Length: 515
Image (tube, rainbow, N blue to C red; front, side, top):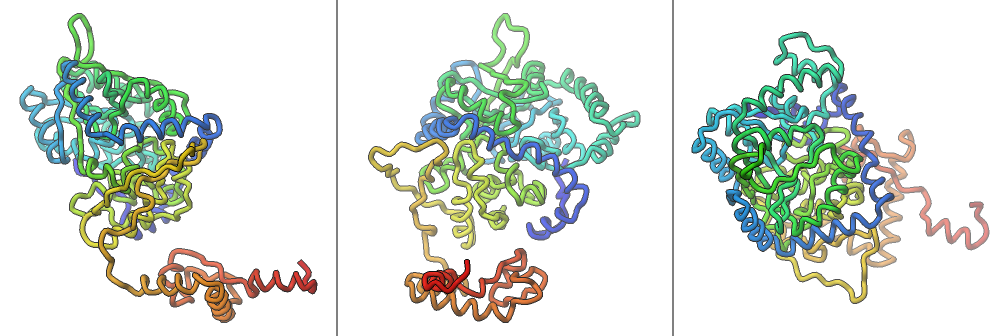
């Protein structure tokens, strides 16, 4: 079924306004409160874990094509059929061909953002293959005809009453508005689908290149049932999910689960090493792995390479003040929140998707601080805003070699510098505009003490005409500062103080001020 946009509006600004005005959505988003401090707790309790995980992820990215080749060789040695998919179209075609060649007609799916990215459920349905989401949150949004709103909690945008209304369309008896009753009904309803299915579709949280181990992290057990019951399994794996060593899971798994839900480890961790062997009683007879590129490999060695370190924990969504007000559907994209604002435009090979998403950020840096693998999300958002001012897809610049200072060792929590941090923001000059001219003049003035002092005096003089009933603030409702109308359209901006700090300090030094 097609995914409809459930937050009304043609643009991000319109959808954000609709989301903020929706009382049911605002009530449902209170569920994010319990996840707000999970990343902070991880940093406080395990101060070195983030640095270790960041180093592990960057080691893989330093030679991702090489680790992909090794993973493919290892998987093939275990009897796994490995496919490379350059695009979502390639991935859909490969999976449909597998289903047709094997005569498969019923599929069960474990939660996977990669399958959302390639619109696999719609493709299977169009090919005459029944596909059922088995994660409860994913099943709710599938029945509702929606996309997941959050990568960890797909239905976090719905209240309990709304969930009951959605599932009532599939239930024979009246569903009470109670967590336990809804969960019990879903368990019984979905159990039959597992037993009928001949195709299991999953994603992968990690794939270890040295052992070929496919790792799934779930809390409901549906991941296990999708991999041990159906005759054929297909795992859709974005290329950046490959890690160098199985031993690295000792760092990455607890960091992922603690950052996502606060758990030391999830209820289920499924590790798959090839198809069912002789003498084994469960597992797929045939196992396929589809390695999905979709523009990711072109980011290697560029200013945006760090984005491939993401482990999809959702921590940046939980702390983002924008996401916490508008939820995921306002982004109208598979990936939402801070990581989605960066990743969506980068994956848009034709340059049409998500161009306005990087603007939906306060640049407060909470996402950067929360990221368990130290992705400088706020820096990438600033860079992407500049790069997206040109038409067409983002054309990432190659990154220069890393230049670490001799003897420097990063302290826990210091952060992992973006490989392109010192690159110019544009590969070709941007057309001049009023904004660019204004910033050029501003930079020239503020490059000298005299220019800074003169501009500050002019600003205070202009502020006298605006000060009064708004008590030192220019409010969104009035647009009372013509030059700042675009800025104050969505913000309350403070006006300059009547007297500058320098003037107050000089008065204090003369001894005739009361501070």
